[in-house]
Length: 266
Image 1: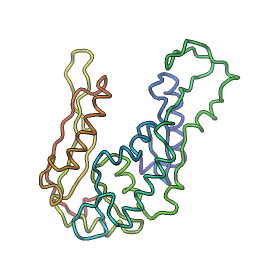
Image 2: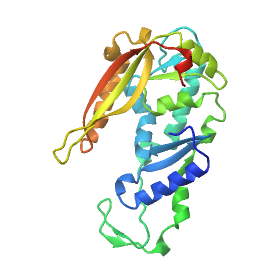
Image 3: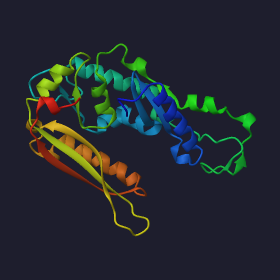
Image 4: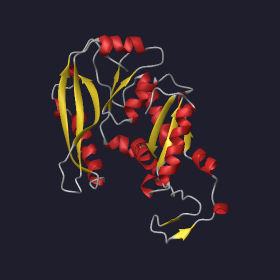
C-alpha cells in the first residue's frame, strides 16, 4: 500500500514493473495492482478472494472497535452498529468481485519467449496471439474506488481489514480527529509479528518484522491469549505452513505503548 507518491505516475510505474516481473516467473501471475481513490495496493487475487469469503470471515474471529465512540468496547460482526454494518457490506462487495471458485489466473507470457508454466508443455507464443504491452499492463490494474462511493467508511479502516488485523479500528470520513482523540485516551498493546526466512545455503537466518497492529490494553488484558489473538495466530501459522519454502518460523511479540495523540497516525 502507498499513501504518497504521484498518481497516476506511481500507478503506471508499478503496473509496468509487475508486467515485466510476471514474464520471469508464473508465481507472480495472481498479483494485481488495485486502486481505491488515491490509495495504491499490490494484491494477490486468490488470497484476497479467500480473505473476503464469507466462509473465511465466519471461521476466524474478527473484531471491530468504533473509534467514534469514547467507550472502549470490541464489536463483533453481528453487532447492530451502523459503521460495522457498512464495513460488512464492503466485505460482501469484495467477496462478490472475487469469488473463491473463480480466483484462478493464467500466467501472462511475453511474445516470442519460450516458457513452461502451470504444467503446460513448452511453447513459443507468437506476438499475434497475445495482447500488446500496454494492454497487458492495463489488465493488471483493478480500480475499486466505486466500492466506497456510497459508504462513509474511511480508507484507514478498510486498510486494517485488508491487512488482516484481528481488531479493525472503524471510523467514517471526516471523523479522523475524533478517532485519534478517542484512541489517545487508551494505552495500547502493540502486537508485532516476526518471521524468519527459510535458509537455503546454510547461512544465518534473519528475522524480519512482517506486520504490526495495536489494540487498547483494556481490550487485550490477556495479550496473545485473547480469543481473537488466538484465531489470528492460527490463521498466520496456516499461511506460514503454505509458504514453508520461503518462511521457516514466526513469533508474536507484545509491548505496551503509552498513547499520545500527537504520535498516533490512522
